[in-house]
Length: 168
Image (cartoon, rainbow, N blue to C red; front, side):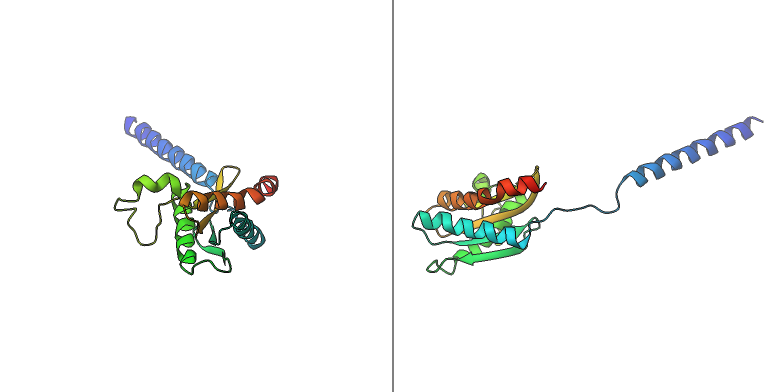
């Protein structure tokens, strides 16, 4: 009789465990919704960024990427050097992959990670966030300093931030 009680108890515990595991799995979503910048918003950010640098008398290249670092739009002002496009892309890509302004990453530039060909850890890249979630990044190249690149990138984000916040 003791073996029967032990077997039933063991079976009951196993059944309870599998039910609770099934409930836990049922609570985990099988898919997630992801917010993304629209093309129009990315274009507004890029144009506002160019405009901010023009006000300073600077011609730049700007890249806006989505949360995965994929290019949504790029602009190169009339006489900005061609190299501003790949550099601006790398800054935007770096910002979203580290979820940080690239100026904050400068101390890591001379490390094994910082020396990767596809990253640029100098000022000029910023993230685009809505409600605490990363939705994109902006990279700028062409100003005499990375700090000015970053100011222009932030001006581009600021031009649409209120609308993004309202869209949440």
